[in-house]
Length: 162
Image (tube, rainbow, N blue to C red):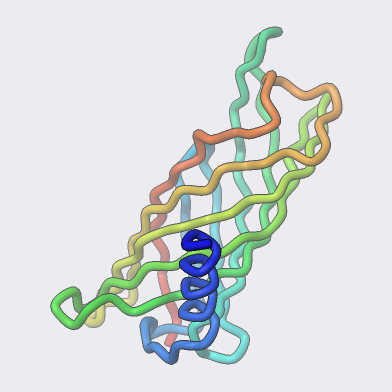
């Protein structure tokens, strides 16, 4: 019962508390994680809700050797302000879906994300670290033996637009 109550309180706080965390409405840059790629964020209403798209070149290892392929991910993220003593910092969480594919394999996945971001006020750059595991819904001729890929932590540098 306590776990359910705590979860409901967390969901309420995430969805309904009014916060101010970001000083930009769009950003584009690079992400280094399980692969190397580009990342773009956009806030349709210039609020704390962001859509993020990622395109990565991933390297997979499986029992039959190493494979490389592309990973395409779309995420919905909610950003939250840190306490005043951490000016420029915010944290975010969200989820979305993705696909990874190569010459001989194809996967579909659900991808939750949690991260920490720092925005520089005087120069339009932001830096973030995140953790984004993949939970596979479909694996066709795929390298790897597991339905969950827990290794995707990343570091991003983005140029942002006010």
